[in-house]
Image 1 (cartoon, rainbow, N blue to C red):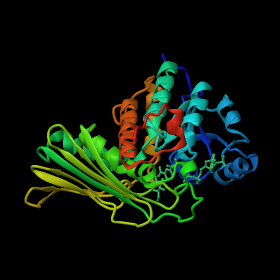
Image 2 (image 1 turned 120 degrees about the horizontal axis):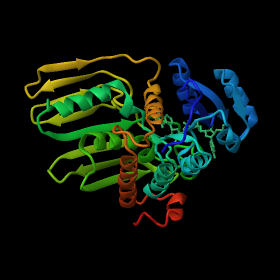
Image 3 (image 1 turned 120 degrees about the vertical axis):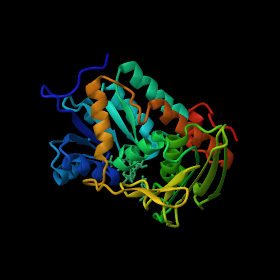
Image 4 (image 1 turned 60 degrees about the vertical axis):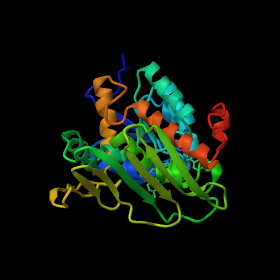
Length: 343
Ligand SMILES: NC(=O)C1=CN([C@@H]2O[C@H](COP(=O)(O)OP(=O)(O)OC[C@H]3O[C@@H](n4cnc5c(N)ncnc54)[C@H](OP(=O)(O)O)[C@@H]3O)[C@@H](O)[C@H]2O)C=CC1
Ligand SMILES: O=C1CO[C@H](CO)[C@@H](O)[C@@H]1O
């Protein structure tokens, strides 16, 4: 039985853990779409106060511990760099709060499993903030695939290439902050491949490093038991078209750039005739849809939904563990997880 949360009128109150780039975007999307953002927590009271003033959030806490202990917070959005997701999610769950945890959910599958198990034991929601899954174009794509419009789906091809900051101390380049293309960018095409095709039977990966020792660009081929394949790739320091394609025996879906944002897509038959063009603008960036899923699960007293079940979050992390094992990319968290990665 899930713990009771929310005010007497059913309002679910959000607490924002961290005050960086994505914390601001998620908070804007929540507030612009009628969600209740109650509090923000930072390692520094100065930062949380500035954040609370910028967004009009009622309470500013000077520590993450104070945020998760706030009785007026029902769900905590974890928006710290990757290596801290595990500890911060556990902190919030142990304080009895539901969590929405930024992608990648954790550094590896062992950490992910620990969060999922604790949330399940406590009857709390722990959702990975893979916001793309919840966007309207992805909802429609799942409907089209389920209807069999593409015939037998044979292939997913998806890229995520960005030209990101070169500063070696930036979180994307720093191994101590979980830097590298795979965990930050590659997770989008990988999660999409899982969404369309499920868990692969085998993975073949290749990569090139940055000077700081994380992966600059990584590519992988997922092979499925029935012959299906996914080609996924990511890159930290060269921008690209960032399109995604799903190919079937009777047609294909072409998702426009940047495919993991709320963008249009077109469905073609195998002759190249247009069967459907989807172009539904969303308000804000679209991060409110994942928040709506959290609130829906809480209201239903459920800990697991069908769009991104916790087991799939763990499976995605396990696939990235496997890729990292093949390309020799290790982080400090792997040793703590009991040497889950074998080179
Ligand atoms: N869904 C999406 O589109 C995006 C998701 N992300 C994800 O969000 C997470 C955060 O990324 P982003 O917002 O870009 O990062 P930022 O560096 O902008 O912000 C991270 C915040 O985490 C807190 N923090 C806690 N410990 C540390 C530490 N040791 N070093 C630095 N910051 C720390 C800080 O908040 P404080 O000082 O207040 O404690 C900081 O402001 C990543 O895991 C990333 O994958 C990022 C960008 C886009
Ligand atoms: O999720 C993300 C989306 O793209 C950003 C770059 O523009 C990434 O850095 C980020 O982590």
